Image (cartoon, rainbow, N blue to C red; front, side):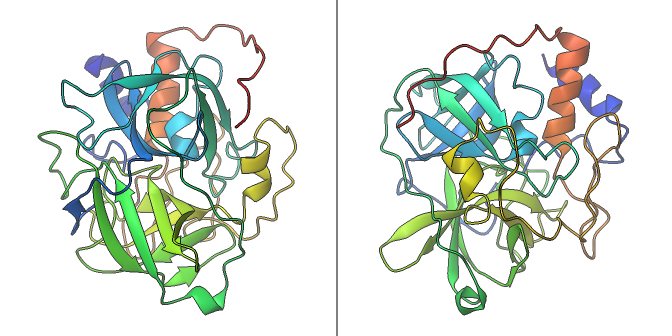
Length: 300
């Protein structure tokens, strides 16, 4: 299995370190306060973070699930403080929806998946409230299972949290930039939470970050993609998404382009590594079966 992942990385054609497998919280602490944040796994191996927003509905980054729409069977989610502990149990994934425009516009870095059974923890509400300039400077709580430091991927996958300040809003993302605090590899798809007056709600999903986990990062906004989160099976994009990702330069994902977004002031980012790795894995290590769409699980 690990050799397949390595082959997938080599096939992407992107100039990235093989250690950059996803996006952990740096400058943070282990937490039990956000049980709705889970660890997304592939054949039992940790892959990304995700957030439960309904009894059977999770949301995560599109680059974590891109390529799994036709066959989500190897995927599962673990809801535990320590996702790699022997006692941790997982819940399988039955259906995957990646934002319909993600393949050509990586700024639409958001996906929804349905679990085969109700999760063992309660969901968290996600916010449709439009964010604006009045929210700049507010606290953002970041939660995920990523590495605690750059190239520090040894040990268990622990749920961690850290607090940063909302520094910028783009048409699709919210951003922070604080040295030594933020997301790292493995946090992709984890939650960015904000108190909008009634307690913490999900306002973003970890998407892009500094390749050396130096602090800056961004999350895909839930308010912008409310239409997709409400009805991910809709084929058309009716979200009010404007602007682009990273340096305002969307690059196609898949055969049309590598999609390795360059981050401001850095040599690149880990945005689409898992998307490309997953896609190459499916193509080179396991054939994709025809899509047979069964009835979707009941929506919560």
